[in-house]
Length: 218
Image (cartoon, one colour):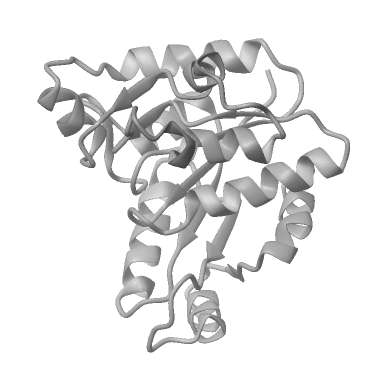
C-alpha cells in the first residue's frame, strides 16, 4: 500500500476541505486517479447532502454525488456539529477508533493510486471515543499536511501542533497557511516567523496546488 496523504489542521474551520478539493482537481488534471476519504463527518445534514464536505470532495473528483458514493467517502456520519466522539454519543452510537482505521486501511488496499484522507477538526481533536486524528495519522503511516490560519494566536497553535506531531514521528510533510479571512497578521509574516522556529510553511493559494503535489512526489 502507498502511504496516504492526510489533510489535518490546527483546529476546525481552517480550510481543510477547500485545500483538499484543489489538490484533488489538480491530481486529476495530471492524469492521476486519486481516491478520497473523509471517514468521519460530524455536522452532516442528511437533508442537504450536496452542501456537505463529502459532496464537495466527490465533485472535485468529477464524480456524481450519489448515496453510494457518499457512503464510500464518509462511512461515519453524524448530525451534531461537535467533535465526532461527542456527536456519535448524541446519537447513542459507539464510535470506535479501530473501525475507522479498518475503513481507511481497506480503502488503501483497494487502490494503487494516491489516497487522500481528510481528518475531522484539529490534529489533536478526538476522531473517535478512543483515538485522536494524530493517532489515525500514525496508524496509517500517512504523510500529513497541516493547515493553519493567520489569525492572532495561530503561530502558537501551529508550533504546538507541529511539536505534537514530531513527538509521534509524524512531522507534517507540508505546513500550509490558509489566509481564508483577513487578520492582523500577514500570512507571509507568519511564514517568516514559523521558519525562524524550524517550521517552514507555505502560504496557500489555490494556484499552488501543483507545487504542493510536487512536494509530495505526486
